[in-house]
Length: 279
Ligand code: C2E
Ligand code: CA
Ligand code: CA
Ligand code: CA
Image (cartoon, rainbow, N blue to C red; front, top):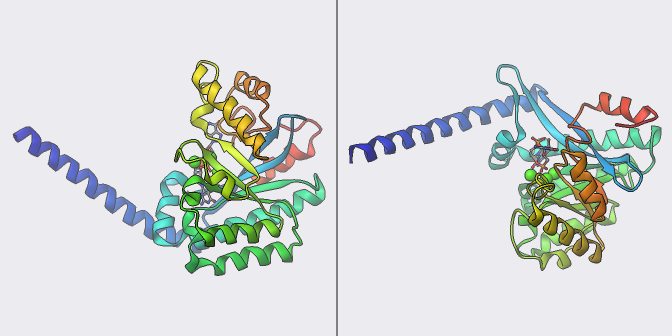
């Protein structure tokens, strides 16, 4: 009993600590927006057919003056619950849109940058936010070049409003990518109910491809299924040459991961794009 009480106290304390930490971090996050402590990094996405880079994913970084680099895995959830994800997400989108415009005109007219969009950014109360994105695309006359990454959870309840929003973006030339495929829900019916362009196989299926016959079978089946539905496939978290070979043999279209490159600053990315032998 004594043991149990101790454990309970311990649990309670860590829970309290966690809540306090989250609260503090949320306050800091408000300042981060004002004080411009954010940076967008770009991770190259390798086209397996020509071994070139025509795409990148925009990934947000927070440089906190005392805490150093705070991981998006820690602050994105806080940004979502506090509603700050709207302003932060708009900022990321603006950065990515301006960046892709530049890279399209100086390196590759088909260059594309994908931007993550959380379910919180699809709530009807924030549909004004869609207008901001669509206006930015118009102002920069970016007919193509942006891809939005969404997660499976968003598509689960066959929501008409979300369908409409995705349609609006698609008719503005925005591609839609289904992120983290395979980790969320087993329902596959939504794949036919929404118009999607890319499917991203989650890192969990890619990380041990060399040693796991099961994961290899899953990757192969996902690629065949996606192609039959007219989707291109991006494998996430590719860390070794061996994994890339297996994915190539399975007909995968794109690879993203540390084997190609970590997420890097726009300056570094530009240098790579300008060189003869990218990445
Ligand atoms: P995600 O969208 O699944 O992004 C991929 C994550 O995997 C990134 O983590 C990336 O750095 C990491 N990664 C890429 N290649 C490898 C690899 O080979 N091995 C390993 N171990 N990891 C790899 P990151 O940058 O820490 O971002 C974490 C998550 O935070 C993202 O997961 C995304 O859900 C969210 N996020 C990041 N930026 C934004 C943003 O601007 N808006 C929103 N709404 N979410 C964002
Ligand atoms: Ca993503
Ligand atoms: Ca992902
Ligand atoms: Ca993820």
